[in-house]
Length: 206
Image (cartoon, rainbow, N blue to C red; front, side, top):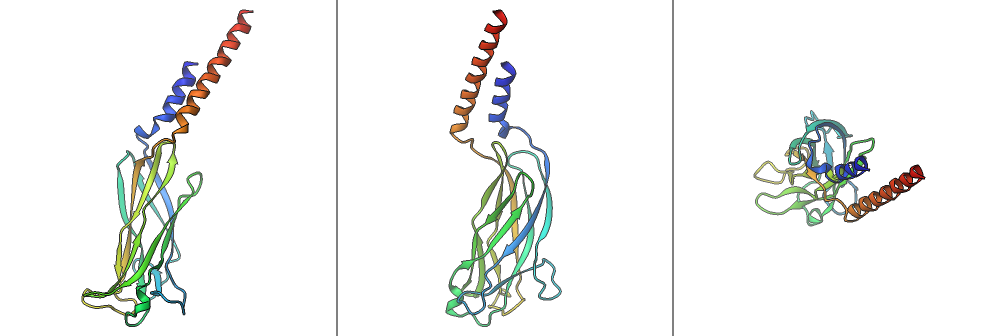
């Protein structure tokens, strides 16, 4: 009975323990590219392209040990092939990235938008919403993509490949709040174990 209760407590408090591991993640990108439709036509490219090389995905590995640990890296580039910045280019369009850890962890898609920005200088911008993927009870990896500026040489809006924006991802090991129903479930399991133990003791005594 004591062992059972200890295992329940351990499951509820795992987020406070070290969780050293090497993670491998496959990254794919889905920028907005629908020829003929309003919006800035955007492409994902490899990090060191010698030409218009499309980014078809890449695998990255990193180590995280304790809650609060983080690592950042560039994962792909963004460019556009529109001409001068037109009013329709200012319309936000979806630009997402998917992070697939495989196995029991699974995948997480980070939602974002890309659009042209009128200003001095004019540019293109991709913004993203961070997300958390669970890797163990009470523990997750938070993925944050930094806002990415592209399509500018720093002084003006540039057509085509010039002014690549490197999408930078930060992976942070974070504690995830245990669902409110879990402590109740653990209590119920503990009571069931206690009742079963008492019945077994009575049968033995009889």
